[in-house]
Image (cartoon, rainbow, N blue to C red; front, side, top):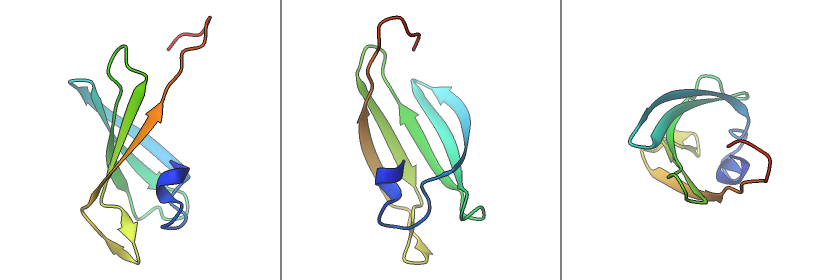
Length: 85
């Protein structure tokens, strides 16, 4: 998540709790190490057979204020022969 929070401060490391998966989308809560009182909600979606992983974050802290803006980031996933995904 580092590319997502690089401009906002120290929100790029922490504990992630995964929630329920519904229709291929898994909810999660990120509790940043440096800001444990600022949980960030989001979802991860990776459709079967697709190399694209979509991460959406909500309520991103910016300039000491929280916004309800949704930030979407796209990542690629790669299968390596001999590994289970």
